[in-house]
Each structure stands twice: as C-alpha cells, then as structure tokens.
Amino acid sequence: MRTDLIWKFAIGLAAIVLSSPALAQRGASCHNGMSFPQFLASLKQDAVKAGVSQRAIAAASPYLVYDQGIVNRDRGQRVFGQLFTVFAGRMASENRRVRGQQLIKTYAAAFARAEKEYGVPPAVITAFWALESDFGAMQGKLSTLRSLVSLAYDCRRAQMFHDETIAALKIIDRGDLTPAEMIGSWAGELGQTQFLPQHYYNYAVDYDGDGHRNLLRSAPDVIGSTANYIATGLKWRRGEPWLQEVRVPQNLPWQEADLAIKHPRAKWAQWGVTSADGRALPNDNLPASLLLPMGRHGPAFLAYPNFAAYTEWNNSLIYATTAAYLATRIAGAPPMHKPSAPIAQLPFNDIKQLQTLLTKQGFNVGKIDGVLGQQSRTAIKAMQVKYGLPADSWPTAELLARMRRGG
Image (cartoon, rainbow, N blue to C red; front, side):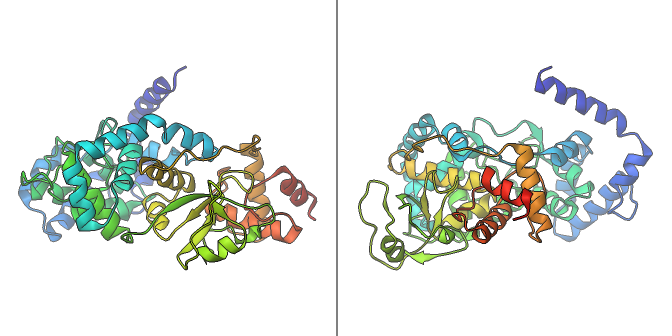
C-alpha cells in the first residue's frame, strides 16, 4: 500500500477516534481538564491580552479547529538518520546550486540590500531557501491556524504552540496575511523559508514596498526577512566564513574533532590540517571546530562561529551541515571530496542498542531512537577515548562489540 494512502487512512481513523471522550480527556490533561472549545476560548482571551483585535480573532475563528491528524504527525515525526553524503547528495544537488546562483542574479538588488543591511551573504540565504521549500515550490498545503491550535491543545509542546498561535493572529492583525492565505506545513511553518509565526512576526520585513510582509509570494520579502532573522535572531557575524572543507592527517588527535571544541586556525594548521585542495590554512586566530559528520574516514570541515546559526536554525547536525555546505557551493566552492571507500553505518537497531548501552554507562543520549544526534556522538567519543579507539564520534561495529562485552 502506498504511503500516502496509509496516511489518508490514518487521518480518517483519527477523525473517528477524535470523538472518544477518553482521547479528549488525554488531550486536555495539560489544560486543567478543559475541552477544546473551553481551551480555545481561553486562548482567545490570551490573544486579546496580547493586543490582538477582536476583528482579527473573528476572521481567524473559522480556521481554529482541532485536527487529530496534525497531532499524530507531530508525535510520529522522524529526524534525519541518513549518511551525510547521501542526504547532502540529494538535498544539496547540482540543480539547487545552479538555481540558487540564478536567483541571486535575478534578485540582485534585494540580495545586495540584505547583505549591506544585515551582513548575510546571498549564498547563505539562498541555501536555506532551497532546503526549506525548493525556492518556494513546496511550502505546504495545510491551514496554519488549524495546525497551530491543534498542537497547542496537545500536551507535547503546548506552551510553544499556544504562543505561536497568538503570533499568527498578530500577523493577521498587522495585515500581512489573511487567515485563508495562511497555508503551510503541518507544523505551522509559513513561507518560502518556513518561519514559525513568532519568527515571521518578529523578523519579517517589507522589501518590495507594498506595505505587507508576504513571505509566501514576495521573493524580496523572503530575502530581506531571512537575512534579518539570520543576522538578528541567529547572531550572524558579518564578514566571517561559516564552513570550509579541509583535509586532515591520519595522526590527528581525533578527540579534538568536536563542535564543542574550538581552536585557532593556526593550531589546526599546526596539526597538519589543510584546505581541501592542499593549500595551507591562514595562520590566524579565527576560531574553528573540526566537524567530521561521518567520522575520520568521511568528509572533514572546519566549522566557524557562524556555523552556530545553522544548528540554531535546525538542531539536526545532518541538516545544518548540508545547509552550510550548500551555501559554500552556491558561493563558488567545489564539490566536497567523496570518501575513498564506503563508510559503514551501523544499522538502526544496532545504534539503538549502542544508545541503550551508553545510557547504562551513565551518558545522557536523549531519546533512544536509533538516530545519531549530538548527545549520542558526545557519548560515543567518550567511550572511544576509554577504549583507546580513534575518538572521532562515529559509531563502529568494533565499539559496539566492546561495549557488549563490557570491556
């Protein structure tokens, strides 16, 4: 059975189950037992206190309905678990590099203005534009207000989506979008770079001069607003790089390869790290971390302070690295070097077992989900150090075998 048909069946089933009093009670457990209508009335009162007009609330009300299908999606979402080279090969494609460069020329005035005002290079903006919506082609097809209020009533991230719903109402009140125009992803994100409503309300700017901040249809507004968010919200450092592919020697002190560890470029050069083409790194004090998304046998990058903007945008390391890499490609960097031999990735269940064993050793790996997140990588590195293995944070069959044996 096709996945889309399975999902339609699941949503239809959810609509039937929604009438169950037991489900409604579970949904209201973090709202003092309120039914959804009671919760919605309370939320509207909070919106009025936050300055939203009754006119905007009335306009939005037909769209403020509960959808169990949205909640099911939120609870069932999976994070990125592919090899970096596979994910980046698909998402940071040659077509997106070329299209990004074309759009920089097409909207040269808006990009130049954004770089002058915010210090964010065009390639950085364009890479997010590519990954978030394929330059506006894939913005989502669901009612934003329906998604937000459903997630606000659910208890997993209730306060976050309560606040996002009020921000969406403020966007309507300000005149940027009508409730009917608010169409986006299931998680309530809007526009061509997929802003949550609070980001939209706080950082959207009118770059085309029409009096509205329209991130769904106005490319200049998308460019200026994304630059504003990266610079102001994510603390971009003007004039500094973000990511650079490098070569690393096999005798590197691998335990130094960690986003939490920074050294001057001169120190990395001293350890034998060079540019990807073999040229020497600048002998300066610009701090950088060595990022090995697939361990010591895979691609290697120096991640500069601006790389933090990528992990703030999306805390998935594979997404952040792909976005930063695509930006370097749009800016003119050559393709990254491919590993000389295939790199083994532990199967999903083995990673889950490894996470379980790490937890038994006292490490906090977050959710045991078979996905290699930053907490798991940190714990893996610590065990590699303990066993005298190269501490490159990449899980291997050897490490798993050692941990199974307990020594």
